Image 1 (cartoon, rainbow, N blue to C red):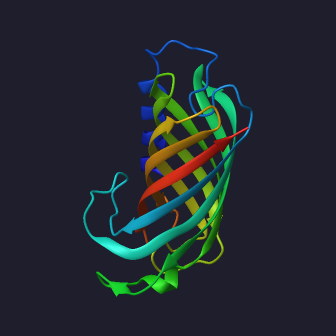
Image 2 (cartoon, rainbow, N blue to C red):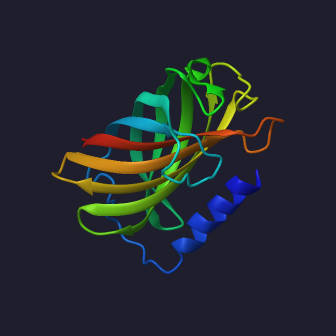
Length: 188
C-alpha cells in the first residue's frame, strides 16, 4: 500500500508547477478513446521494472476505453480496462501458464509533460483478476503505469508504456506482474 500512496503523491506533486490548460494531449478535442495494448512480461518486483529477465508472460490484448478529465487542473483520462495475461512456459522459478488470467480494472492517467502531439504521463488504477494465484495471493490488483505517447493524427496515436500490477501488500505473497508494452489509440 505504501508503494501506491507514494506513487499517487509523486504524480500529484510532479504536476504542481505545470499551468492548467483546457487541451487534453491524450485525445485532443475528442471525447472518447479506444486503445488496444499488448505487453511483454518482466520478472520484476520493482514498481518501475528494469528491462531484464523477460519472461514468457504476455498481456494479450488489453482493451481500454477512456474519456478526458482533469486531475488537480492537469489534463488526464479515466479508463476502464479489460484484458488477459497469458503465460507459456516455466522460467526463473515460476510456472507462467498458471497466471493466464482475465483482468478488469479502472485507471486514471495524468499528463505530466506534453506538447501538441506528444505526452509523458503516469497513471494508477485498481481492479480484479478472475482467480487468485500464489504469485500475488489476491484477486485485488493495484496498477501503476508510465506512458510515452504520440498522436499521429486527430484520431490515431501510439503509446509505449511500462505497467506494474501488485497486490500492494494486501496478501502474504507480494510478487508482481510487470510489462513493457505498446498501444494503439483511436480517439473519436
